[in-house]
Length: 112
Image 1: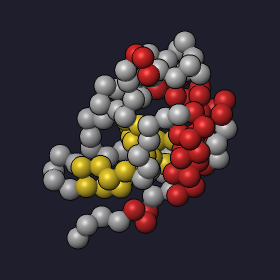
Image 2: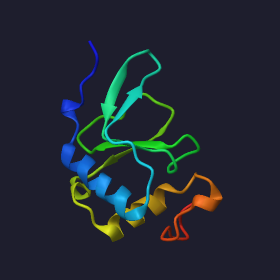
Image 3: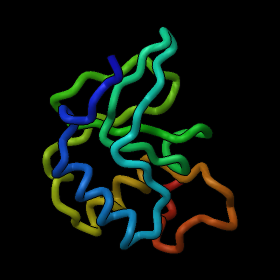
């Protein structure tokens, strides 16, 4: 049976879609993550340019981290509403791993 995205946090997904639009991010949300054992699970989002050279996924704080070699962040309910300052700070903490010439101008110096 193919997994269904019904268990994801749709408010979290919506807020990150707003963030992607406002901040000019590449985002896939929700995202079907392939697991090494051949199964797949839905996660709230995938950010290909943050967290590590292969990107990162994020899930709600009440979820468990899936077995993956991607960077994983379990984020709080505070991210269910877009707050520019909070999202910029978080993205800066996760670090930029995309192409240098595509690095967003708003990304603070603490980002990679």
